[in-house]
Image 1: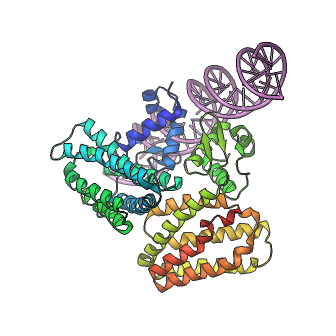
Image 2: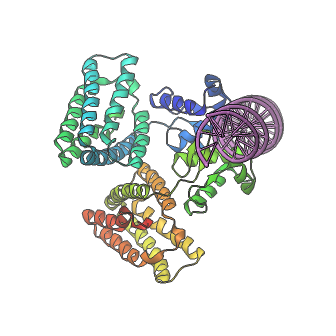
Image 3: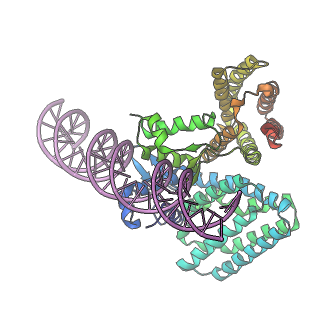
Amino acid sequence: MAPESDIYQSLKSKLISNGFAHGAKLRAEVLREEYGCSASTVREVLFRLSTVGLVSFQEQRGFRVPDRSPEKLIELTHMRVLLEAEGTVMSIRRGGVAWEAKLTAAHHQLSHIESRIHGQTPSDEIVAIWSGAEKEFHETLIVACGSETLKKLHGQLYAQFRQQLMVADRDFDFISTNIQHHAAILDAALSGDEALTRQKVHDHLARHLTGETLGL
Amino acid sequence: MAPESDIYQSLKSKLISNGFAHGAKLRAEVLREEYGCSASTVREVLFRLSTVGLVSFQEQRGFRVPDRSPEKLIELTHMRVLLEAEGTVMSIRRGGVAWEAKLTAAHHQLSHIESRIHGQTPSDEIVAIWSGAEKEFHETLIVACGSETLKKLHGQLYAQFRQQLMVADRDFDFISTNIQHHAAILDAALSGDEALTRQKVHDHLARHLTGETLGL
DNA sequence: ATTTCATATAATTTCGAGATTTTGCTGTAT
DNA sequence: ATACAGCAAAATCTCGAAATTATATGAAAT
């Protein structure tokens, strides 16, 4: 039998990879069958996901997938820039060579995948791999910051960001610029230039601050 | 019968005002009686509180009140400075006169209470009033920032910060410096000097960045 | 045709019991 | 004395059904 934590992870990744339509109702009775557990168990999971912003909840009106909104994406991006820039600078200060090695490795992986995608429309599987590598790179940036609080907060924001972005749209034109952005962040971090690093983290996410990535 | 949202609020405020000992076990069966509902309902509430960091949860081992730790308080303070400084600057830019008036009002209230406390050891009731006013002032700083995401995040952090701080300790010696800090933040904000405002927000919280407020 | 109200249907919320797992205790062997 | 196994007690987790509340349907009145 699937323990509740598994259902939590499974539902979470489905929400983040846009396995549900935005605004769709999430009925515990329906999801119950898919996971082979009771409705109460699903309900608990949905409650937990609602407190971290991945599911919206209204009393007596059940659970829903949050709607997409340009404002929300802009706000989430803003917070990501704030936390990621701060966390990366902290990692630079206290991460040492071990962190630099980890970051270089994460970038190498991501870079490899992105150059494969470059130009063509990738398969579902490639998209999933890219998502994992992109997440890994951005998590590695802040992994040595020394603040569990920052990392947990960033995790919440990143998940909501992904949910808003709908990578499933397959608009991978941005990949080529992404390659340059990620390289620029890596170079700045390795050089130890804190101001430059902050700038490059900001530049990488800046296109989400205008609403253009949501078709505005 | 108390709806679940009431139990959530009630438990939350009890956790924040240190109505439970740090590290204490939170058994659903016990809390059930206090709120006159079933254990399952309490369990759901505890789950929700765990996702926002006010309750710690371990699989098959139940719920606990998070332990106090200097590191945690330092991390929470760091994040508060980051978000509160940013949010206040955003409020300065887009809040207008209406926001300035609200902030002045909130400060006036807080200032009044703090000058009454000054020197003496206050009663439970006064502490509760002060807590409310202090929360109100800091929320007002960021209320006009325009980002629901920032406000929600800050709310989570503020709650955890309060839980760590244990105001119940009644060490109100800091009140006199607090009065000056709050006034300095207000003045800086009203003057429109963004850099100065960031500095004053930082200064106000700086004493929590050393661990001294946890007896180190 | 639109609104209002009563009814029927469906969804949500609460509950307490049964199944599972952990925890504490006791006796035995090293 | 310490370590370990087995047993008992207590706590946690899961479940499905009952109670409550929202939503949809349709009839009557304006």
